[in-house]
Amino acid sequence: MRNEAGPLRVVLVVEDDDPIAELLTGAINEEPGYIAMRVGKGPDALRALGAVNADLVLMDIGLPGMSGLEVLDHMRKDARLAKVPVVFETAVAPAHAKDMRARGIAAYVKKPFDLTEIVAFVKKLAPLSRAHATRSG
Image 1 (cartoon, rainbow, N blue to C red):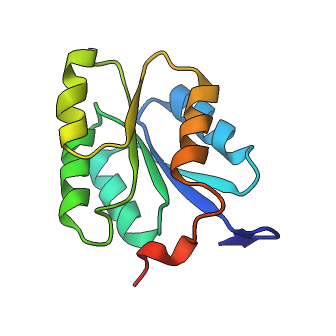
Image 2: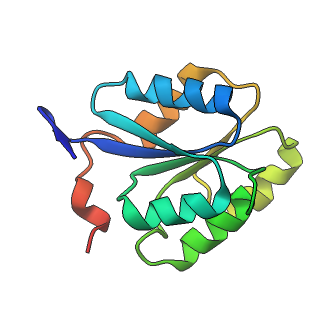
Image 3: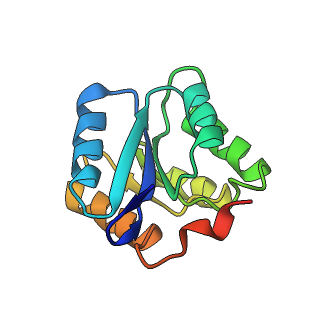
């Protein structure tokens, strides 16, 4: 996917709560150079990641069918997905942050979150200047 400035950065939003998902995808899609795609279940996230070259995954931990942590574990075992940054948006206590970082997340934001914080993570972890093709092939 390209726009006038170059390749679009694809953010996969994995969130089963429709209002939250709409807020997240809306905020990301308003940013020039970024496009958000959304799925609502853990297994759907794995299928989407197999089909799309995502630059970042923004994911809830509590998902139907498979938790966000299980999705993350599958991603880290797949050579193509192992380095895709993952940001969890979660209501879990900060005591779980160490376990999440040990599993390889880039960051987490605690619910309720500030949309500007989410957009800042997107821009930091999937910058427009990064070569889109670094993980392909």
